[in-house]
View 1 (tube, helix red, strand yellow):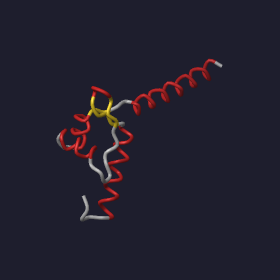
View 2 (cartoon, one colour):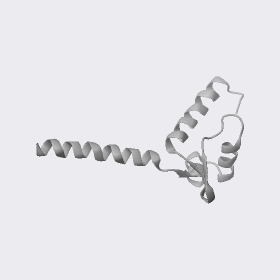
View 3 (cartoon, helix red, strand yellow):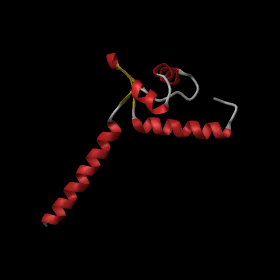
View 4 (cartoon, rainbow, N blue to C red):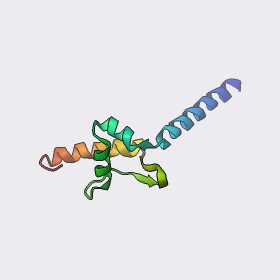
Length: 88
């Protein structure tokens, strides 16, 4: 019984940790560093009409991006560029 409770506790803790990591919001500066571009370029990516970078403007804190949204967006850019090499 003790072993079962310990295993269950470990599983629940790992789920909570993984949920917390996905809920952590990235600043535009962090996204810029990850993508290897300027903060201004990230802002342009957020505001562009075609395939914008998903982001939320949070009051006075500025723009924030979920890591999972960033990963999906990058993947969609790679797929889109492979299908349309002349389009950016």
